[in-house]
Length: 102
Image (cartoon, rainbow, N blue to C red; front, side, top):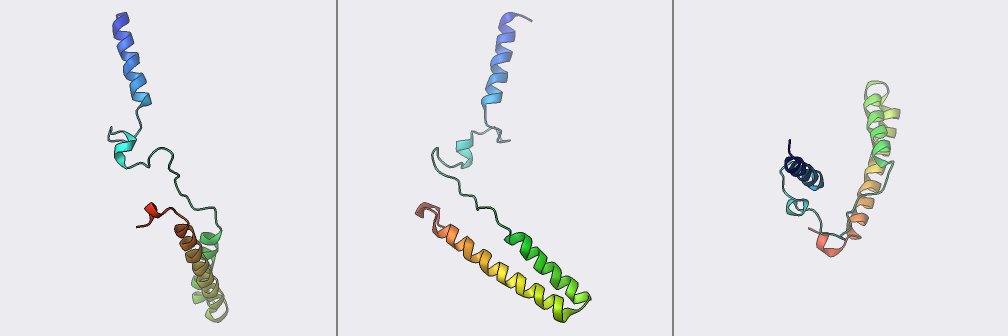
């Protein structure tokens, strides 16, 4: 292979490695990525999904063993967790800049 062919191959591999991996070949900005400098909102860590799952599990277990104790306890845990989860999500959404509200 000539030196020119090798240089062209290197340029092509460099260009491919610098291009965003979008799968469609389009740059990330054409995909709808946020503008540079805009913060991406991610919710904070929470144990609420885990505790809600435990509550639902207790409801299911209580429906087969003793619905009065386990199902009632699981239902209370589930409802309280969902209320707290929705409240936290509403607070997070309300704290976003106006252009993020739909």
